Length: 119
Image (cartoon, rainbow, N blue to C red; front, top):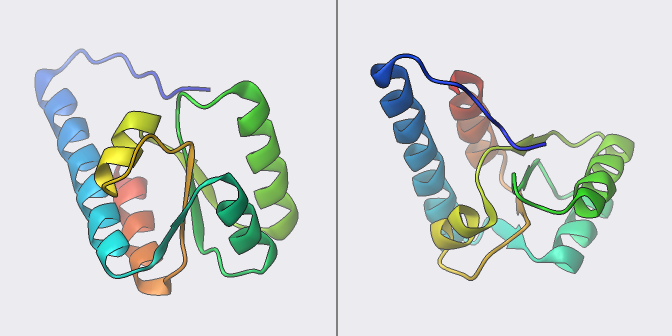
């Protein structure tokens, strides 16, 4: 289900947009460091091989994709978050649209989890 927040305060909306930008920047840095796995089969392989630390799922992914990824991450006990759209996720790592991204590095995962807890 997409993240839909109703903003009554402009400063809260600006803060949320800045947090999304910081998340996208962190994903770009992780991509440059080679700590991102993206693409349907690569994501599933990383989760099954227990290399995945955090899974990011696009807010606009299909219901079937969301169910499959939630079931997979639940079984393998990997945290999963829905924050960015497919377009935003793809742009953040310099690729075309992505429905799912995996962070494989513990340090980047901790940083991302901290940013996500602030959102």
